[in-house]
Length: 545
Image (cartoon, rainbow, N blue to C red; front, side, top):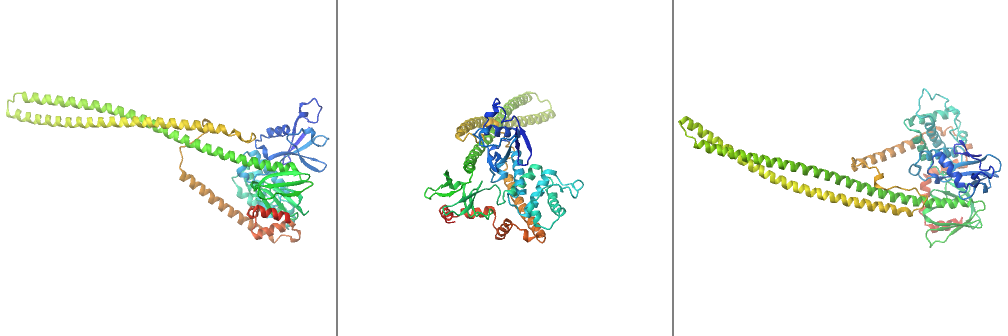
């Protein structure tokens, strides 16, 4: 029976037993078969971060994907225990981790590494991280439920931090709870992501260290992480002396315990170092992962551009459709109105003719008395006025009918242009889809992106870019304010507990971290400063260490 243990030490047994009798087909399983089974069981799709780790003779090793499980030097006693762990860490958790299960597994592993002091974390940041861990586990703070002592059985702070201060468990709980209460409204996944966003800025986050020697035989440490390769002094794992980003490295080769790193600039000589215990596959796999990550990012950029173009074409098609519908509706209304106007003009003309006939009939009638004559003249005058009015109205209606006919002709022309525009957009959309099919030359293990326009859901009812820009600016301001507030809180807590610190219990890493903080150095600006140096000067400096 194989036993798989995750980062949080939750154990899951994966049947059947791979070390059972040879009649079992699973005996022939390769590492990838077992790994894929675990990933399917977890519902994990972002598999490239993880691996299966096992221990043999006090040495940690990783299950190789292309090698049979039983061909590995695994322990013979049952059950064989594998640890499902992250081998590689994202540079930016919020941007790179998509699935909630991926995020949760990273949270559990990073939290354990901080508590086990494999990742150095300063005391004030440890308290803040603990408060997010409590939010993730307990949900919103409720003083009626979360009473004094509710964290007594929880492991939330590194032992180093607890031993460094003259503080009781109740005092630590009070400070953790004060921050915990401020996280109200955050769901578990949000609290875990905030934890990772803080942890990823810690100097030792995601760094794998290996003992190496340069040409002079100087003992050094090689640090490998998502940013690149870093050279450390063995007594200082926080601050690298030299850094080489992945995008500056062309190739890494290994021969007889000697590593050769070839810079991207072919004019610069390669640099070499030796290691008898360096786990070659892990380093090479890190480089492969970095390259795949770069290709994946390029694929995602291509996808985003194609999606943007499809959205634009969709918007144009929607607008063309709407214009076509408006043109058709306008044409129908104009045609109907023209017909009515023509009928009204005919009716008015008929009435005018009738009025003229009536006038002639009245004139022909014998006028017997002066009164009748006067009345008749008045009726004649009224009839003439009515006839004149009818004629003017008839002429006006005739002109209106001519104008409506002209408008109808223009509407028909607009309809024709709208249909032509829609045809052009349809042709462009088909071309974009053919472009998408041509992107299959990317590595087969990269995520596929379905760019067929019918499968994309668009909503163009609100395309107010000004509003969107204002929202982005607002979020930026809120983030800056939150960061400032967070730093103030950290500084306040650091000042508050400083008087309770036992200086004699400070570790070498505590002292180094405080020195870096006093100089204003952080993980990212230190690496940035180092990489500003030319590659040639960094290689020369490494050789002279």
